[in-house]
Amino acid sequence: MLNRTGNPVPRSEFRNYLSSGYRDDLARDILAGMTAEQKCIPSRYFYDARGSQLFEEICRLPEYYQTRLELSILHGACGAIMESFGKGDLVELGPGTDLKASKLIDAAPEPEGEGICYIPVDVSESALAAATEGLLRRYPRLRVLGIVGDFTRDLGYIPARGKKLVTFFGGTIGNFTDPAAQRMLRSVAGVMGEDDRFVVGLDMVKPVPVLEAAYNDAAGVTAAFNKNILAVVNRELGADFDPGRFEHRAGFNRDEERIEMHLVASAAMAVGIPALDLHVAFERGETILTEISRKFTRESAGRLFSAAGLTVERWFSDPKEWFALAEVSRAGLG
Image (cartoon, rainbow, N blue to C red; front, side):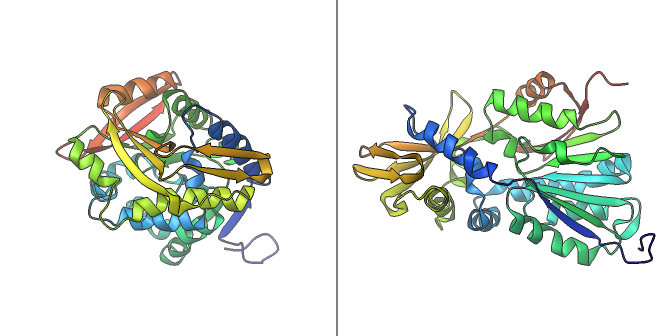
C-alpha cells in the first residue's frame, strides 16, 4: 500500500496517551487504598510487563477454565459475529494473546485482514506489541493502531470513523463494582454508532469449588501475579513492600456473587511509601483487597447493560452456561 507520494504506508502505529497521568493516578489510588478501613489496590495495576506475562501463564493453567471456554464459545460464534460486522475497526480492550482476535479475523468475509484495522487498547505497550506482532505476520492486509492508554477513560482516542466491533474478553467486566462497570460501559456506548456492536465475555455463576480452584492454582502462578502488584507500587512510588511477607488468598463471597482476592500480612509490619510521605501499619492477618471478580447470570448481566444504555442482541454460551459472550448494541438509536 502506497501513500500519495508513492511511499509505503506503515501497517502499524502505536499512540501513547498514558503519559505521566498513570503515576499520578497510582499515587491517588494507593493513598486512598492504604488509608481505607479495608486496604485495597485497584486491580488495574496488575498489568505491567511482568504482570501481563504472568496472566498469560494463568490462562494456560488447568484450573483456569475461563480462557478455554471463551475460546471454544468464540470459535462457534465468530462466523455470526463477523458476518454482521464485515469490515472496519476491530477494537479490543485489554488484549492478551492474539488468539481471540485471530479467530475473528479468520472469520471475516475478506481474506488476509483486508478492510480491518485492529485497535488494541492497553496500559502496557509491550503487551500491545506482543499481541500485534503475530497478527501482522499472519494477515498481510491487516492494519494495526495500538492505543497505549487506560480503557476506563481513554476510549475517546479511538478514531470516530466507519463501523466498529468492540470486544472485551476474559470476563474482565467482573473486576468492576457496579458503579464502575456502568461508567466503563457508558464510555464504550459513547464511542459506538447505530450499527456498531460490543462483545463482552462474562464469567457465570457456577459451583464454588470450580470458581475457587481457578484463583488458587497448584503451581502458585496466581499467587505470584497477586504479589506482583506490590512490585509495581515499589517501583513507581518507592515503597518498600516485601512481597514475601504477604500470602495470597482468594475465596468466593456468596452474598456478592464474586471472588475476592487478597494479600494477607503474615506478620505485623510497617511499610513506607516515600512518594506519598506515608507509613502504613499492618497487623498480622490484615489484608489488602487486590481484585474482585464478579460472576453473572443472564439476568444480572442484562440489568448491568441496560443501566448503561446497552441492549443484549445475542447470547453465545457453552452447554453448562459456565461462560458466555454477550453481543450488545446501543439502546435507543435508529
